[in-house]
Length: 359
Length: 275
Image 1 (cartoon, one colour):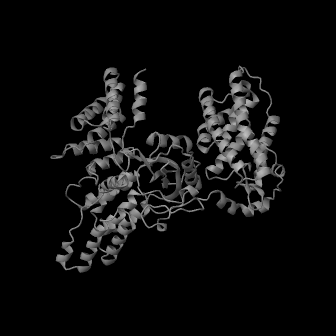
Image 2 (cartoon, chains in turn blue, red):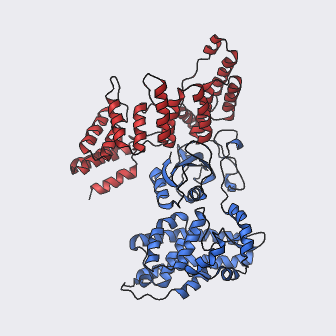
Image 3 (tube, chains in turn blue, brown):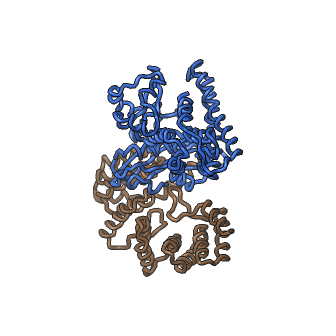
């Protein structure tokens, strides 16, 4: 619903383009269909949420369908962008342009980062509206462990039933930034969500919001008897990992495409956000169960003297976020039987940049 | 049965990183009863699964009995290294090294192998070399002479000329028998500095010494390709794939070797060759 509102606003801002490009009817129709697929479950979700609540089976079922559809759309849109670049409204029309943006906005950090340079170029060439790019920037910032710039990304407090703004940088000047991106004042935006924007109150809540948004599960070796074990922690872990697998084994990661695929994933997905003073190692411990599902992610960070150090969130949280998104994990297979295992990925960080990944 | 077999396989791998077991009688002969008991506790520890609470507890007991027992600190550290708790590993290695600087060499190659900590590895290897006048020996996994490993660290730091110099120097040491990857790394370094004849020469020598690596044929193919020798380029990339598919490649249970070639590398090169 929130994004539908945005869509209406954006349609008002975006005027027709009269360039020399030739309209691609086939591509436009394909994107129209993708847009429909992107929106249909979101519309359904809203009515089911109002009727049955977010914990109902109906709601969960639609969420699953939506997630599957999003994955399909991501593959389709990747194919289009890799072939055509960002086409713009003169080639694919308003809906076509919307479809591309919606699918990326509903994708993951890896896909956003991969197409960010293309979208920046599209913005520069006026093929993408500043307001849409702003929303992408905000979502990426939060997933990279940084505060958002325009206040577009919201969350919902289940207890108080209130909508709130996820951590926002420099709240005092947010409306100046929003205006420059073609977005309405934050108070108006929040009013459209039936929520009052209170700047002073927000500033007081900000530290708690930061803790809520970027809760990092750090590795604690004292919590387990055997070296390398990861104790289940209900604050962070999926219930499927509550019961440990049949036996413990520590091996190199099993991942579709092997290490080149892991390296390529981070090369495309990780962005150094001026974390120049971040130097050392980020180690992510995890468990992959016998169905190839990863869980129990724990982070350990140290400097080059092997002393514990807390890195800038834009390094540590971003890496953690990207690992959550990795889809190629495989179980350990021995004599046609699958086993779960512990493994790790270690990132050597030099001036905020991933220098190499081991093992 | 299967679980037992997997466990056995893991235990076999576990043994590839270890110092020699101590001779506890040394303490007995010295009349040091506590350290003798500690030594026996250390030996008892390695009877259990590495890294298990039972094993680690025995090491703790050993250390409590004899705080000067470097072997217990070292052995206790190993599962932390393998399971990526590098902070705890290093703390224990610091203690082992303070008691016995011979562990500097051990820590040096582990810093290279597990963390690609090139500066740290060079520092440890140099400190080790400055304290012991004899040959600085080999990495704990047996893959490299420590001078070759040091050269790879310099390569990691971007100092290719220095890396080549160190490898070539080691290869001319009287009585030194080249290890299985020495000429492969030298060949890749020459490739990287655009010395194609030098690369082909080194990689050919690698095949003479250890003709069981897809990796060597892959780099040989690239070198010939850059010299516009299409026939050799094709021949070697086909051989690289053949070797790779039959398991003839650089392998390691813990980390991937520097210069390791992956199937995707070979297939990409094949696509380029068959233009």
